[in-house]
Image 1: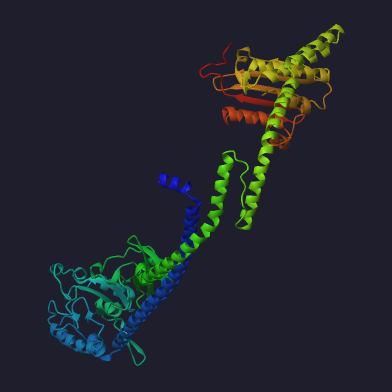
Image 2 (image 1 turned 120 degrees about the vertical axis):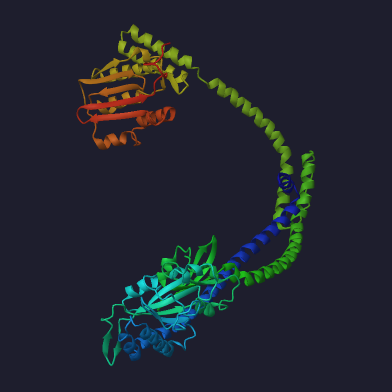
Length: 617
């Protein structure tokens, strides 16, 4: 890869231009192609989602219409006078009367429900008998088979009683599990999976009056059974998308009907089920089984169950994707051929003048400055060629001028060296001034000059960021001497220095700005009685340097700005340098009380780990 990139960098301009044009073309086509594809993809996906949602909603309306007719049948049956007369006078302890009633009730049920193709079976269930069976013996494996004493205390029985006369819908269940018929669990039979509608018959209305079954200890329950094929017949083949599936679930996620019948009675893993139930109908994108799917859903107004169609987005988009890619490839091929031909012609127009220029530059590089261009090509190239000809005419002049310039530069360097001042001359001059002051008994002037000389020597000679404390203290004492003479006894300076710390390394000039701040700000209103204490101590944890004055002090606002504001550059500089050299735990702390004075504490790390104080020279 690296060799290919190096070859491309070192290749001919003609090749680079051609590749650049092709890359620009390819990039443009890809950008617009992808943008157009995404737009079309979004439009087609949106339309497909709407179409699928329309199908699901219509299918749900068909199913609701079926359930609505069944609900009307239930209401008609509950008002039937023959059923009321038969059941209200029935003696449940008379087996002959019960079997006779079963035949009559079967005819009554057939009158209302036999014409429905959606119902699988209908019974009237009590704790002592199941009415409406295919035979009075309630034979096993028949369409209407339910164990005579098996209905009581089942989920169906509990749901009917909780409904208190309202129609209750029970999701798909396993018949053998519901009625505890153990020998049926391993068998395959027609009514293995059912869902039901149950209603506890409290009584009936007859000629505007409600006839209650209040005298009956065991109120009958109307039981209507359905197979999941009721949904399958409606949904099957209604969604013409390969890989799609459908399901019907209740609010708890239990599957009532599904394309894959092995999933019946299980629960669907759909985290957004509650949201779908609340929305009632619509289209959503959801991740199912690790893959993004389109969900079109509609909720039944009668059962409250949710019908869901699951469609892979890739299958919705597969036809348009293939057609779009094919058209784009054909378009790209045609455009590329035309563009490459045009790019080749254009690159030749650009590179031919360059070839001419390269030959001329080679001649110039070999010292033949008489080389001249014959101006041709576009305006820019003619200007470039003219400038090249002018350059060759000036080269000879420049060679001569360059030689003369070098001579002048050397002369300037010699003059600059001669003008440099030897610092010893300054020290000697200051010493001479000091001696002259002593001869005239001007001792204060002599002290100031000597202090100034020491400060100058310290500033010039010490180049390191870290110095011995004794050297920095000497510089500080010289500064204090000068300031003491300036203020003429307005303050007293007290030194409390631990001699063991004189050999420690400290930041250069780390105390002088703090002392200067005390002179300039702390003592500015004092004419007498000022005291400045400079002290230090050390321990295993840190070295502490204190600058204490009894000046005017400062309030909290001014104190807060001392280490942050731009008005106290010296103090801010010292704090930042300590942070850079030793880290954030070390630096300056300022405590001040207005009218009483200020204390500045400088905290540095211990000079050497394990020692109480610094090392000695």
